[in-house]
Picture 1 (cartoon, one colour):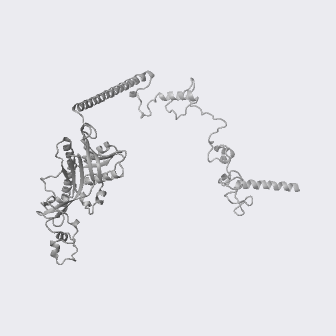
Picture 2 (cartoon, one colour):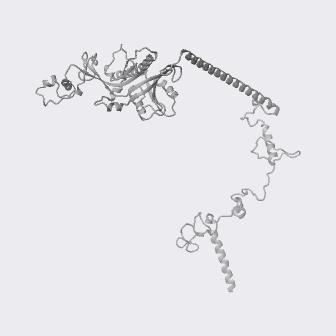
Picture 3 (spheres, helix red, strand yellow):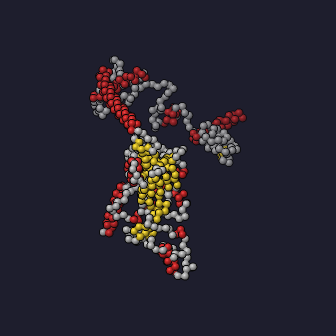
Length: 520
């Protein structure tokens, strides 16, 4: 039973997490073109600011275009783009709302990386647990009249998850803060990123040390009351000046020693970077293109704006007209192609009966029975073979064709053609049991080859090389010297076969008889 409840609890938590994740805004932070090492690090620092609702390890290739990011943004639930570019004179940042804009163009006047801000602080507070929750957004001086100011404030608000005031908020999830301050004089936006810390107030510095388990050096104190009342021997950096500007009453328990509900605590901010000074350049209606809603450097009159709108409408009408003509041309080409195809098929059907060809409907079935009459095409093919080659075709070449016979000839089968004298049959028809099968006449069954004698079938001639190996004349293995003719392997006689031995013996016998006669 407990296992089922655990499964149900996990499933419910997963559904809540998916719903929460799908309802909050997500941002892609990437660069376009060559930006350099420092601006590339600024891109990575901005991804840290937008965590956890961003792609921290997003890979951008040179081949990627803006359409590629827009195509994958829909399935992934991406709502905003933050694009950094660099020119020879300036660094620019674009904020775009998906899928149809608007797009805000900013000029990055100044910037500082996270490592630069941290190196300037004596003590910094930044750890991985701070980036497990989204930062708290704070806007300042964005209530000034102006369409571009309101649009800019709305864009920044929609990039971060909103806080539901009707829902109980867990204060422990607020670990960071993003501050955007607008200066109406310079018309610049200051971007700051802080780490948030809450400490209790209303007690001396010595008591705070004891609460934090950091015991000071009390060797010069006579009584512990001096530590509690005066707080001597403590550095000034440890005692920050708190006032009404950062002291508040906690509605619930906050992480840290002494931060109890309904008790006063001080909220302290430590900058962790990055830091940017932005200047709004222009606002475009669409996603990187469209009507310019605001431009800080170029101002146009109402007549010029109307003229621009007219030209844009004319271009749109011309585009629609071209598209309509293209569709009509495609339809006409398709209709013409179908008509040509139909006429060609009709011409083929009319031409077949004129040439005596069999139409498709009258084509003979390939699986006809044997007793059925053969097709006429086979006789025509056999006749064509006779005219072209000048010989009768083989019986198995055109099985359904009948051989031509002259008038008055008996229907006896043709005799086989005699071969030329030089080309004999592959073998004679003597029986394998005939006694003269091994005679000279029988040897012709293999052409003009000479009979093989004993082991001499492995050699080219009596004194030739064997097995294709190097050596002297008659040597059987390469590298071995032949000391004496006819002797190999240390004087052993080579075996030449019975037929050769008989011939040698017969030749020797005749020689001896002749020698005896001469003596007599």
